[in-house]
Image: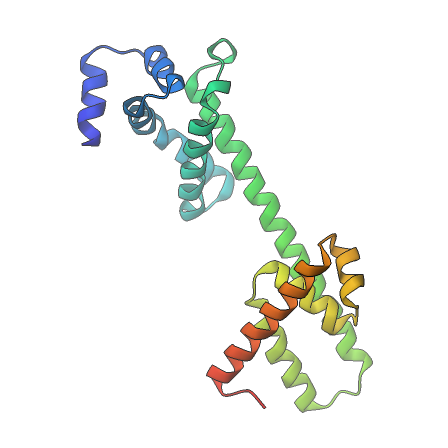
Length: 195
């Protein structure tokens, strides 16, 4: 069905400007035509920025969803539809890179703080192994749960202090703690590590 739309658009002699006008007007057929025409270029920009094809494909989808939702903000006087789409893709790709960087920095900081905590205690082999198992398991949790658990158990912060440090509502902090501990417990029960 998709190729027929592109053929129909091309056979009628629609220019890029006419397709852009139909797109802005909310024509589903124009959305298909715009996607078919410009998705490869958007993919190339995203892949060049992010370095991975899988992440770039996600950005292509996000770009076209964003473009469709905000299509009335497109101004042909400021540039072509392709340039507008590439700008959205570049922006979303940079957002993705910033998110990756924050996550990496948070995990590094959390691991560093747990290493410092470990060196302060009497180093017994079984405690080191236990901490490594816990650290690995926490690392598999969603980022917010990781952060809250580290603050609670490694930095000995109260729920209120965690809420203050993370700027999260107290109820959200408690939910992250409860869900994180439940996931850890479930994992350890499955792995046979529960004591």
